[in-house]
Length: 250
Image 1 (spheres, rainbow, N blue to C red):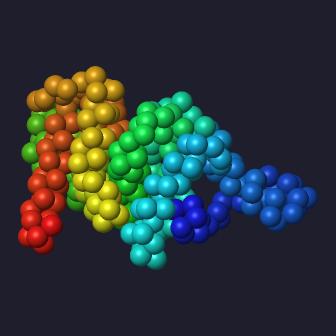
Image 2 (image 1 turned 60 degrees about the vertical axis):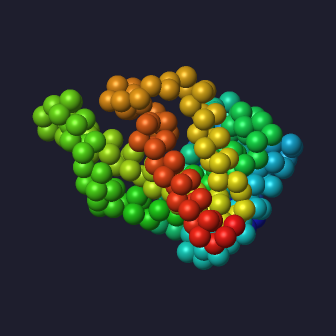
């Protein structure tokens, strides 16, 4: 993360050639950084203020776990955006950026643990090398099977099968990010039930608590759908966490 691991901006090609030849290297790097953040996060970066401090507190705590990973480098940008969401962009297998809009920090209020799980989920995407490749995503979709078959039948034909595979890829990778993020989150000392709290807060915001196939279909346009399958998967993670704690006598 931004002050926990270095972020390599190798995207100076985003600058005009003329500018590269007329401004100092340090200024080029700063301008390249700003351009990349604005392009990926769709807003300029915020680098001070209460929201910035709150996000840094979360980063520092998660950093006790993330710093052990020497393979992946992730830059976390607080974006001056009104969007209630967060997203990860993987430039390659090793270098990524996470965008957290100011509105998302506001939305979580003083619930640091819930904000921490949102960030942990996005970290899950940056650590999940399988979901960064088409072959890996297809393997994830094939392992889910039944949901893809149902949706493919509903949508029909080759296009339906392709759409169903895409949906299964997305849903499978979201669940994997939840699981990886949950490990980072709990290993950092956060209360596991704050992850469930984050789910509940988002579900209430989205205003759709239905279950069944229509809930799945209704969620197709969302990049972070709160589907019944995803909620059930989170419940399994919480149960397993409780069992492991009991086994350790905690």
